[in-house]
Image (cartoon, rainbow over all chains, first blue to last red; front, side, top):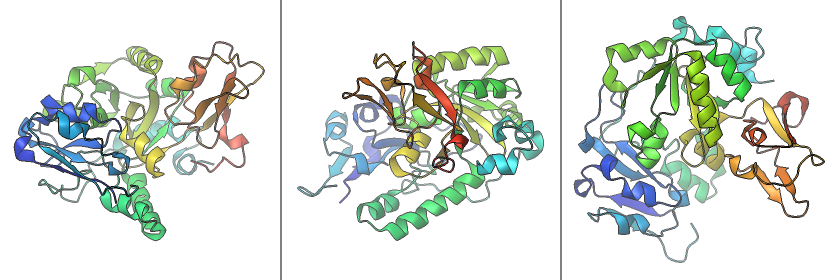
Length: 84
Length: 278
């Protein structure tokens, strides 16, 4: 089973400014996107940026992202003992 | 033969050296489908740089080759019609820079997504040609702004990025309209990741393959860390550089740092088994 990464957006107000989880992930599993799509021709306000797990096949469940998040917004679920 | 050169080469050596593929008449906004939105929106559409979603990863994990292949085909059809890229050598890049106008240095969407990189540290992409006139009407589209460069300034910028170890790539925006020049690396370029990690060819290999002349190679190993495609290794048995021709994208970054000139780029077309290995 692929690990599942859940981000609570309410606890993650400005990931573009914080970006701690993006930088700490050793395999770049997380991606920064927006909850409004690409929004052509407009600058996107910071509160619309979101973090998601997008390359879960590389997630080792090291939990560094969950630990570094200042607001505890990230949860990683993995099935123990089963090779991903 | 490269299918893009065949279709869009127009008598030029490469399709991206054909000025017609940068022409205004090819430029128009093609996107018809609505953008997906909301927190459950597809992270790819939302700019999360996931070229293939979780459904694809799950199919791969359970060994469902039929689903994997059909999703790959879908992704290829869409990418090749709308937005895909190819690796270029330094020499080819310089020919392109002499051909296009305007040249607008802008921020990289991939590194923003992967690293949340601040705009001022992130000027590694170039938008080129008539598409850049959008900037005058919608400057907010371009986070961090756009710096317009002369061909000579652009060559300097690209040389600096290349010396840092970044690979030159050219991208279509509505194939064959070419409008993006990027400087990419593993693991922060979404195109390289998708091609190398998932064998989904949103980035095609270049027209060359790097080869090591074992007699000239002095075993310094400087080239090894330049490869962004997992093609180059240092062989402990021969104490020389070793290039996996099947995995080489032909960017020539390894060649740049080879002091004894042991690495050369040979045309892919001269290697029958690799001619179609894009």
